[in-house]
Image (tube, rainbow, N blue to C red; front, side):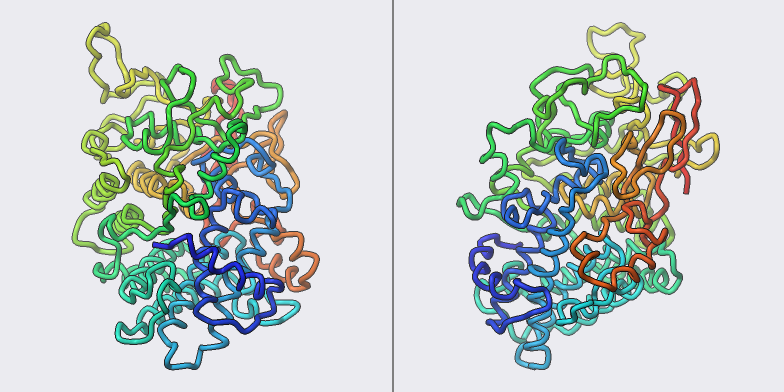
Length: 592
């Protein structure tokens, strides 16, 4: 685990080396490494405290909205706009996370007495870049932080090929009898070589899975080979929640979880707190998910669907549409269900990679015939659900959940009848209920849980759509569990959604138009769906002449958040039908 106390130790070094991304000043190479993992996790998950001086938009809020897991009302990002905070995100990645690692390679790359520590720095750098390339696509990689004024950008393909190679060769290069960091200089594993090797193999597996349907055959084939290599060596993978890798926090004021610090320091600003997203809540409640009380708290008010209410990314509605009984009308943020203490307390850890995620990758790999495991895809799927039983501080019994309609592995059971909002596999009437009362979950819901516009819903389709374009039910089940495993890992969850595109979410109506977010305008309707990337920041556009070549590598050759990256599939819902019999006359068609 990473210890957050390293932030204090790093601050003086940080001032020296991070004034310019193309400048490195000689300092102790061990101390250089200390801050990079901490800075990386703060950049990925910041709640706006540690990097407030840099103007860093709280990352957990941006990517929480993008992933459909956490909703934040303020700022332009829920409306898929931008206010320039990408500059701070970009700057922190290069200055605070990558630059120290490059400096270590320059200073000690040829020193045999430092070989383990250099390999560890390269492994962490590969992880950092695996996140960055998933955010922007082409980025400066091979020449990053090398003192080049106009730093060239590298293609996604070249970056991914090198990341897969670096993770493998540096994991293999580590020697248990070799050099180690001094005490407390390695905030992640304290120079436990076996743990660093395991970390490298698990990140390599994650990246390989991301690339198994990549646009270019060479990368796709390399990824599939890497996937099989990692899955065929289970001893190198996380096989229990005891082996999860995370950033740890403590009760001491300087070492608290920044998300908790933000809420504790802003007790009069509950209206701005992040809350559970409607898209996640509908899937938790709709299937009697035991994780409901772990992920979020009961709301202050009572609602038709129980004690919880999730907020969509934005409560905007299609132009000219009036919604009867809209639960979000005039609702402030404190009207909704806040994030659970498992994630929002002073000591709540920030997960990097976990056993449930690895279990889901195993299930998907078998299901897609990318790997032949010892079990069937169905068995691996149930293993993945069982992996949640001891994932959190509160033990969860997942038995009933695994047998719930829509979660149980689909083998040809009666599908959900969307025309009549019923299903053949119904819950028995509760004591005292009329014998003919039908419900679809234990809270007594008669109809499926739909979003406030009645467009998206919790049902994982058990039958093909009329146009034959719906993904199959069991693949949706696997992806949904994977998505659940990545709660509060916003970038990872968003990356999964972009890669698979099988979970249908409600679009954002009338989105901000400054970054190319609108797919089309039809009649009174204007919408944007899932963003595909972050735009290059204004500072890079104005200072690096090479960025034009990078934009030219993108799918639509525009610095748009809807430019599809090469690991991703086209966005769901990019086509719509205007059908008067549907709620509000809008029906989204899944397209690939």
